[in-house]
Image (cartoon, rainbow, N blue to C red; front, side, top):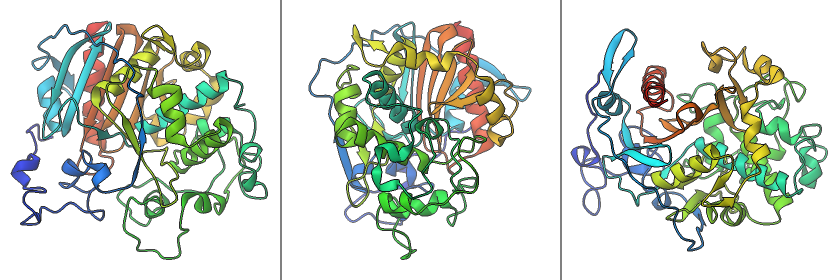
Length: 406
């Protein structure tokens, strides 16, 4: 693998001048593609409608610093020594922060990012959305064992009958939806981006909004079966949360989570043409605020002396679940990770040790590593949605670093 830093936004000439020249224009048609994503992921609100997630001017939670020089940290990957700095370059890093025992020991930004810059989370958004579900469960407003139509009455008589909220949280519904190849623009996982305003319309037969799209989906098997990763299930969860929470998604997330974790800045979330929040991948936050959210998880649902999420909800990720392990094991995502599973929109790598992560395509990650009391948040712009070699290198570096801190 080439371990050389990729060209920067400036070197590529992206969005320079008015109008941009020499092929540097970033548009709705190319913003997810390399090299345009190196600008697009940092300027989402300039491309797509977004809803504001206010921190409500609450005091920011202080992140004390105890910097260490980690760039020369060496780990082994595929039999070769690799430095932490080389890993960051080779994984198209835009920003990374490491918080160990409550203190920032490393923080770095490249290619136009700064501490105040928001960046698209992609599917790390799912982990944030599921945490809002935990808040509403704790308030007695949401029952994970209830079915989707129990909350969204417009979905009675559709394929969502019999689908429990927990099936959405664990990606175990029977819904027919193919998201196995991010390079295939005709796959369901890419086509529904036209519905949610992430791509120009090229299929006029698609529904006009996510609510219509969800209602028209069919099943290919019974609900509650094996794990299969499908982003649309998180959109359904977002709809459920709006109904049981009694408000728009962005407003609920602001009230119940973002204003309570000591966020420095407002976040935002992309919306479709009717203002429906893209809960599966549309969050944009700063790196430090994502780390604060991770610290809240690491600390059992508390931060700054405030209870944000019930401790029991967070601790659901800390017990191996034989049924979920069996449901996850046949999937290609299981790889060589014995005992891993997917639960409440988190990838649980080692439940007993308390190691779990949120992942997003193009290299977004939020790692909770309890053995070392560490949170790592990383923003990236990989050249394609999912590149296995880059994914393995990034995981190897982050897990080795956390292991060295234990």
